[in-house]
Image (tube, rainbow over all chains, first blue to last red; front, side):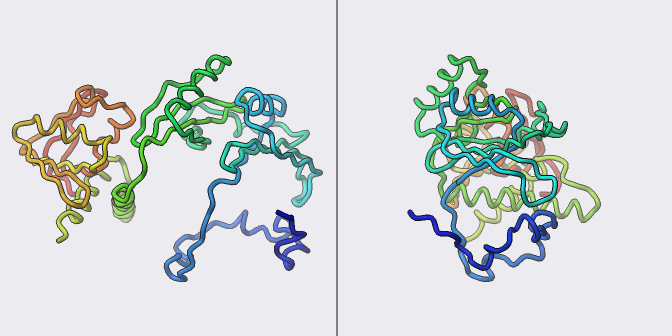
Length: 235
Length: 86
């Protein structure tokens, strides 16, 4: 496919990074936003293009993703710092993770890793992670045994409800998950997902209104019981 | 009274199978995708008997629970009746 000079002529003379910064700095007030159902426009996505994180370990990151995991390095941007004042020169590089998805890194030249970006052994930190899918149980097994034979520490297999996963860290401390979808998600899963979150949001709203907050999952499960009873009692 | 609601999917069906072995449990299935398990005083479930991995075990009552968890250990859970609001 030919690359057009620009997709949006009006936007070409300026950059969102220089003058129009509200999209990065202003709080999003969800209550004030129009719901999709109100304008009947269905927005579509076509999977993950890339995710990106900063790195202060250039060689280790390249060698880990390209040479240990074997992900092809497919694109690198090298640039002078531009846009916001003080932006360092940088490298931005992308590894192919299959089905058009890439994992990308920014290496900001002549900068030190701030302390708040140091990895922590804490679930809040590990919540931000990359999970890649594999198509078969054999492939999941192959990832675990192969990476272990290459010297990496890999978690035991962990069975979640619809996923079975293994976990390891990259040289930056970022958590990686390799996961196998155990079954397709069906309509009842969607109904159940909606009810669980509806239960949680209802319980939380009510507790907050009384100056408290949601304290445990049991409270959600009890409210869920009410919602499910209502559902199954419907004629 | 204790009531558990169980989504009709493979990973949670061991709960229903376990409940079948409890003599005073009443089990019904709705056409909306949930099993309903009713017991007069308590329901005790065992993780190993259900061959459940911990990550599923600790989400055991995600289908809904009308009751109170008296004990939730790594291998056994006991739910009893409660007056707490739903």
